[in-house]
Amino acid sequence: MRFLNSRTRNWLIGLVLFRTFVPSGSAFVRGVSALSDSTILSFTNISDSLGYTGPGPHATVFADVTGDGRPDLYITRYDGSVITDLFYRNLDGRRFSEEAGIRGIGSLDGGSHGAVFADLDNDGDYDLINGVTADRPTDSTKVPAPIRIYENDGNGYFTDVTHRSPDILRNAYFTRAVLAFDMDGDGPLDILAVSGSRGSDRDAEDRNEVYRNIGNLTFVLDTLNGLYNAPLGQGATDTDYDGDGHIDVIGANRTGEVNILRNDGTGRFTLISARSLGINHMAKDGVTMGDIDNDGHLDMVLVSGSTEGELAVYRGHGDGNFEFTGQSWPQHGYMAALGDLDNDGYLDLVSASDTSVFLNDGYGAFYRGPYRCVSAWGDFRGVALADIDGDGDLDFSVADKQWKSRLIRNDLQGGGAWLKIRLISPQGQAGAFGARVYVTDSQNSLVGMREARSSNGYLAQNDPVLHVGLGSRSTVNVRVRFPDGTWVSSENVQANQTITVDGRQSEVMDRTAPPAGFGLSDNYPNPFNPQTALYLSLPVNASVSVIVTDILGRMVRRLHSGFMQAGTHCLVWDGLDDGLRAAASGIYLLSLEAGAFRAVRKMILIR
Image (cartoon, rainbow, N blue to C red; front, side):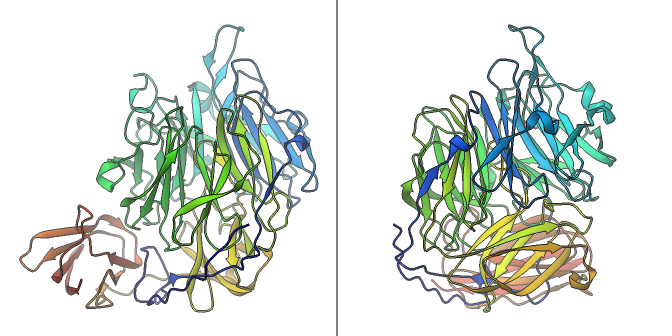
């Protein structure tokens, strides 16, 4: 049983806690919703409904590929032998039928690691990228193999169309993670395949595979991209970590810093020092992103899986910088998943290897929750979430290389309300990877933010239908920002249902026009403690520099330095210097440069 104390916070709307693209005049504050003490969260192991899946499971991938509204499950396997992957069609939320062979995605080879379902041709159904790792000409030898592309016919039957992409066939590496995201903003999803597991200490000849989508499920290799030579290893995730509207890549590294690869908006990536962003822990296997404290910023869970592994939680500031929360604990599994298990409005945590789930206290701190029906014994890899039985709570799958995959049903009783959101991009792409969804209540308080993406942690894909717990709320507002800048809003949406937000529907489309000119608002509140916010208006894309100095002109904090798209942006100073130390009371100057535009605002911090 989960006991929750009543939680109330009256946060001023002016204390905007995230910087992202929002329609002009919009602002959100953190929403709070308490559940009753009668909430009971428990789990049932229903792995027998899958039959025997092992040994060798690595990736665990959910999506409705047959079009019946129920998430199906794909499991890759790699165990040192010639082996097939597994596809489980969801029959009714309780029973599953293994149909990889008849569906055309068995992939008989030397084994696979990563896989993602993605709408690669924008026709409204999920195709498949299989990160084939190796072929085995003999029982004792293995050679690297090309990844494979499978086209969905709309009914969940697939055809191997890899031959359309000679560049893919010419390149063979020992693939780990695969991602599908629109790296260059042209509409179709591109592909990144991570080669090898070691990261910085990789073999000199190892290169990642970066493929541009040129249409008709055809891909060409991009060797000039910063992703090509990046020291990636193991898991990776496609995420807009700095909130600038471009999908970046964060990847694990077994022998060096976490890989932070920033997208400049044209699909060119720069490797940024993780330590320069405040990230001091390693992530040898997986990185998972999610807003754990409902401030609108993406936070981060880093996992290094081994006998001496560790899980560490970082809070994002919304500008690309992170701060260690002090939360860490031993972890020998390869990743952790984030999802609202009790529908109270806060993301909880499912670690790959722990015997219990971890519940969110409402402020972004986790405490041990109920037993999750999986023992600590095993070699745990991917963890993915989906509402497999349609009852509004999140179930999950755990891949165990040593034995078999587990499928765990959530038997929540007395939990909060919920909403599931199916996205279709303005280009017709199922899942709309790269979109952000903001769910707010009648007071414009943020109930939850979700980011649509292809991959999480280590080789895991949650159901692309996004799930948001609503607590005690019966109606909410939903605002979606698609990757091309289109906004779609739905007001007074009833709880406990699945809705579709379709960016092609022009009658609900709000393609926010850029401001008419440059501008910078006064900061509010002023005086302030602990943080203050300003709005920046950009009529065109621009290189932007925002710094905070003391009254003598000495540098205190660099809030932003780099590209920003045209639009209205919220800038937040949290009263900390570049060393994340609290600045003293006094007068500070915020100086902004955007192209030829210059502006200065005086801010008064009172401790």
